[in-house]
Image 1 (cartoon, rainbow, N blue to C red):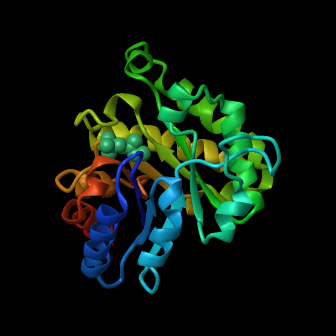
Image 2 (cartoon, helix red, strand yellow):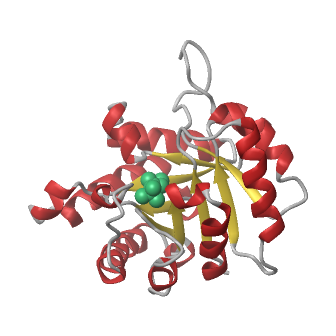
Image 3 (tube, rainbow, N blue to C red):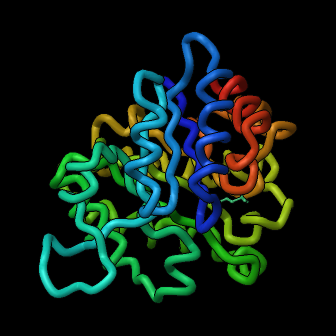
Length: 246
Ligand code: 13P
């Protein structure tokens, strides 16, 4: 299956910096490229959509509301995102779970709200260091994915799953290809129990993925792409990862 490389810019960037970054990425995109998504802060989405027009790059959001509309100050609905050309939405990133108290049920509701409006949710799961050391990794990621599977029902084959071990995010401490593959295989088995088309669901890895380690991670049988933070802010690094996936 075609791999997916998504850049999560988090709360970084500026209008001029984004323009430079995107110009360099678009200029350097390989032929026969894998699927490429960039997820800027919401305020820049319209600029970014314009900057990538005519290229193979798609645009994603870093979050989406679980609600359709109404009194939800500060939120953006899936319909609004879709209207602006946003085709993916990260849901349940560990930073949202940690700093915004997002529960498994809320993350599932967000995934469902996105799908209902034609936006593909990238559902993030992952254990903390404490949970890994306590031997709870599989139980944690299975619980998180189960909530999303439950919420999206028969649309499960339309989601993207991102395994992002919390201890690997922004730390430079990447999961080894074997550690990541082990968890991806667990997630794949869980998807197989939910849908006949589980093998078409992309399970991407995130957490200090960079130009140097991308190829070995992407070579694993159940690693179908990457969700890249820091390295997606440097055109050369992001392009190297895209190259490794293409
Ligand atoms: P880093 O690549 O900076 O570790 O971030 C990963 C991430 O959280 C992507 O969503």
